Length: 583
Image (cartoon, rainbow, N blue to C red; front, side):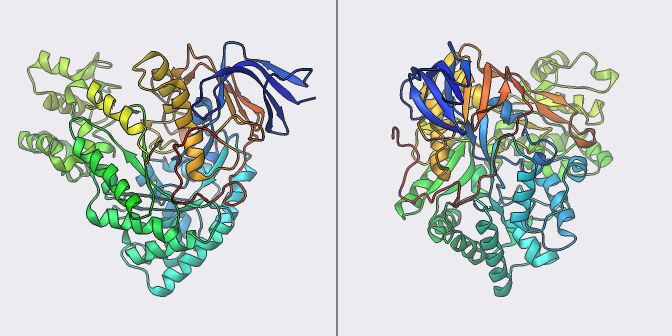
């Protein structure tokens, strides 16, 4: 007698095949039958009218810290995510080498990943040393989802080099020590090696993070160590991920994959019809790597992520050319600069320059909407479009936006409407989704908590496929969210509904599946804020056959596991593809 039978669902198995009405039998956390499951069961779920699909796999998150105060990994769990990958971009909380390492990494994560210092300080125990100790600490929290972690370059450098990790290249002895420490971390279950060389990543003191100081030989040596461990992979972020790869970046990306004999994924590919050369350059870089025998895979999001901005705190606007030097000034000096018309003209022009790269999508000033305001002068503006206010006032859109923010001492919450929400951009995205060197992902869930709401891309995209733009079939969208990432990371027996696979499942109403608009809530340790959105239409989520979400609400059950390399993953050869349909 099976422990559980899900009866009468439309089963979409993750391969891209058309859905079929079937039952699903589950025993011992695994799927034992798909089809007609006759006879009694210890428990049953009536899934008539619902779709059953594999649990979604998020390949790029930063839940490394949040898991300690929120082992449910909200809100990703509510959006049907049953497995996720952390430790990306070179940023992890382990290993720790000296007594000051935790404090450095804590402050670094505040700056580079937008995590609240109060939450990191009060919500994370920081009582480990090795990477294995960290994984054990995560497992002790009994996560509700399956979680795996890359080993971050910044923590490795800091553990070996201490304060020298910033400002110095490693000596041969230090590189050897890092390689040994990485090997120990991978043997303990780290899923691979992640590093970052992006200009956007600076530490608490405004200096480049440790990984940005590494010579190429150091990076390649760490990739070589990764090749010695079963079921590992590589991940990086570089300047070219934002605005197109330089020749030297293409060469390094290729060499990393070849040295590690592993696929390398990078984040994030943005498609904009106004700047088609940028994403074509990035796809060409992946193709060049493949021609050399390597494998580079771009992550891209299938939806436009809800986010907010403020001129009073660090956000994506700081990344626009020359904006950082103005928005980084002390508040009084910043406000004085923003009252200068010449400064505003310079900022407006630089935002529209080719150097803005992917951040140019933030320049649709007229379509920004005003969020929370804090002054009598701005009363009644919440929810209004900046372009409409500007016409009433006879001001340029950008100048009007700055006027509003100055009236609130720059505390005004701004909700941008990206400029790439046009039909041609969406047509191009649909083409890119099927490119052999592209997979869906890049939510950054767990990071930039008060600025971005990327976790809901799973249900938002399926809803869009069913009732919106309909640029992909539901079956194909589910394949992209399940089987494709499972194959890229070599996750054993995950990503499909098939006999013998883990019973990680989502049951949803196809008429209602979607995502609510994000809003700010204050529910983090220390009263810190984050953007929050909710899934609609998710009836149940099961991890290892245990219901973790029911009726859109998380249960108390936490059956997730820490995914460890080798045990839970297999090595993915460079020549294999993750887009192949079917068995």
